[in-house]
Length: 236
Image (cartoon, rainbow, N blue to C red; front, side, top):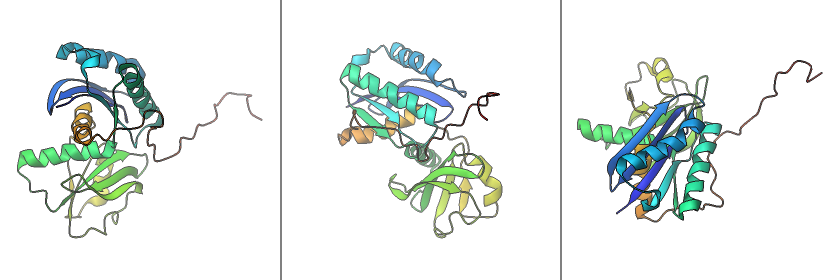
């Protein structure tokens, strides 16, 4: 039995949900760059109000830990940790890519697709022809760890006997490169969601797999590099 608040801010999507024992009670989400700090707190209040629940009734807070946007991840993780400290609740750190893979797996189940020979390949856009990605099997076990992949037509040549479903906001730009690869299938309309964060978190909650609040940090995959401000006369 669990009631989990889920926060998803790893990309331009801001999504908050409440899930109780696998059932979605409420969700709020929007997509727009640089809106997370302005909308996240309001979305949290909204889902509690819709569900008719109080903050202290939750059993845990789950948050998307990355990879993803530096700023988005910082906002989501800091908000989740703040709630956990204030409410004395555990934090569940969820692999952002795994939450996408969970959604693709549910799509297969709904469509009656046998996933035994399928590898799930979530992709987050990392600009140009690079994506943050990983490979998961039908049990959501990692087959290939998260990595920053430069997409070429040989990207998954080491899995010739597997059907690979690829999806996420980084997948669309890969279609032309993967054209003619019969074992690569594009899964449209799968995007990050607080609901998926909660569903994956329920599995971790059942195992008491909680993050250390003091030391938990987002997984950026790439180091953040701040550019110099372009102010005339500031630099020689």
